[in-house]
Length: 430
Image (cartoon, rainbow, N blue to C red; front, side):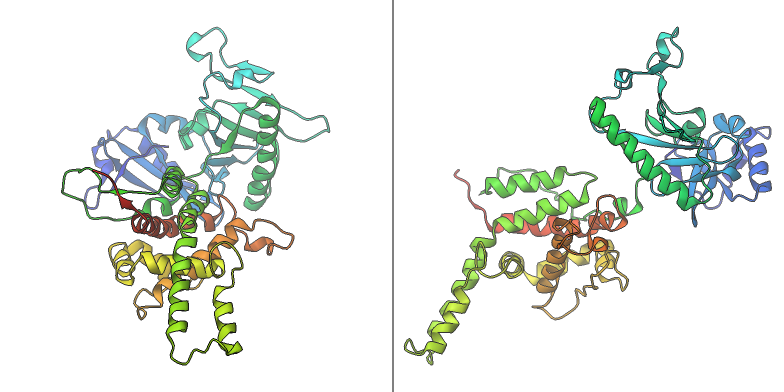
């Protein structure tokens, strides 16, 4: 699979090809099979044929280069389907196989697989290919399938071209797309977990880059001024949490929680200020009487402390955001980030249970409604348990579509965390 597509509107990219190019033969074969395809011009002026591979009720675009076209003529694309959000493909037929690209979480891949007993090099006599090979994984219960962990097959290289390690599940006849995806997730994840247990090698299914990841990027006006020495000193602990959030690339749940902890760090300070304002207003009331138990009870209710800080956590979050971020600043944020605005205001929300937020509502309501939303998400991320912590379908689980949609929420969370850090800063000695 090739990246770097360049759109062309008026010119057919295929016009630049040699009339005898194998891509034309492949195009005819693909069209005869009833599969959608189109010509694509690349950034380097090469031409590819884009083929739409079936993937459940949708499809996945695969780009075929002229170099790979001859090999593709030997492939039956009607018997190939992409699986879920993974960089994975299933080949149907007499020798069924699911192959998925793996990302490596425990260091460089070079020589890692060679540590696993049973490793067989693809070409032992060729030094240039010494790192290529596979490990066969079989069972002792009469299973009708086996697995292989190793370098990608030639077919997978054409379809994907990503990663240097794949997992292959061979021999299982899956009748439906859903059955194949479920088998990949259950059996594949079990294999990778036990490889980690036994050999200390951590792999994970490589996922296709979601469109949401590229769509939700905070827009900021480019600062034309040269860098200057800072005038402010930021609290070390929340600044460390902020930097942690910024480093959580590809982990939206972790990023969200780190930004939330930046806000949470300041709860005590700003909820106390909110409390003092309420107490001051009560005590300044000309009708307040120290000998009236009802008046004293109001004071007690205001000062009640269910936890750290003053008021419940939801109230402390609102106090912190209201004190540090103006309504105008929040409105301006949405004005310059239209993609994020569309995410928040959509009638059908990407995260179940959340309602749309209208940035055009009257001032005084926007910050509170956003805080309600933030707190609800925080609870769904933190309370990841079945027993007493909510229903299973209410959890925000890693790698789920809902978790991926947190990327838009995190654009706002980053903005709020920055504002809170600035509000809590002190002058830096010259």
